[in-house]
Amino acid sequence: MKTIALVLLALSAMPAADTPPAKILVHVTHGPDAPTRAALAFLVARTAAADGHPVSLFLAGDAVTLLKDDVLNNLSGKGTGKLREHYDALVKAGVRFYVSGMSAKARDLGPELIADKPAEFAMPEKLLKLSIEHDRMFTY
Image (cartoon, rainbow, N blue to C red; front, side):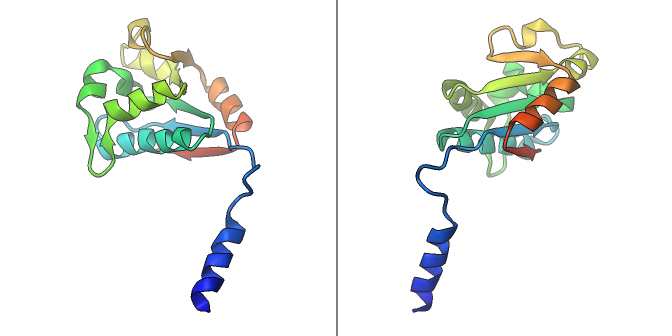
């Protein structure tokens, strides 16, 4: 009886099938110095996108370096996977990347960083706008 009650409780907590997907914003500030956190941010975004949620990523601080090809190809988190695999799945899912222009400039990164990526440079006002437009925000 207790098991049935738990199953019913779990089912009642599940959203209805016609519930629209939530818009998810993942704000990332950790870079290669924290590989597990960086990969985890991309993994969470990938999981949300695979579940049908519209997803955006805003990379700021050291996270702007995550879009460098050498970092994408070599960063791996403990138990959180390879950054390249997450990134490729996100691109395939149509996820948009916003890169802090101020953070990129402070790290001598220019247009070449995003030239071949579904990304754009953005200022803090864009982060604020995205946070208001999205239903949920995760920060890593």
